[in-house]
Image 1 (cartoon, rainbow, N blue to C red):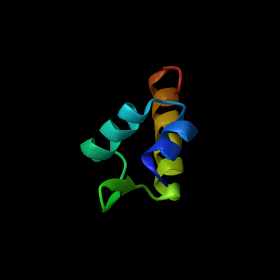
Image 2: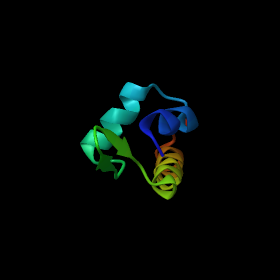
Image 3: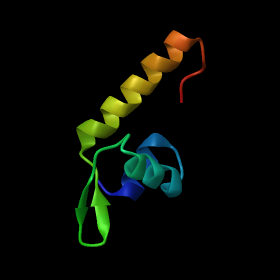
Image 4: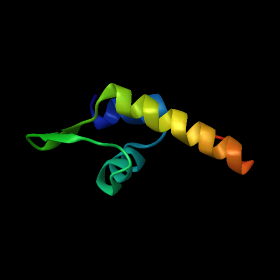
Length: 61
């Protein structure tokens, strides 16, 4: 998935998606000048974020 597609699915800005990639929270490979993120990695990140937020008593993304 492109970073723009990731941002759309996660309902965040492209800059936030790029930050997640650069910080290592979302694994990605570089293709030319762009990044590609495995679809399963996006859904795994969302699942973990949701579960972590619920455990902390916070509202999930």
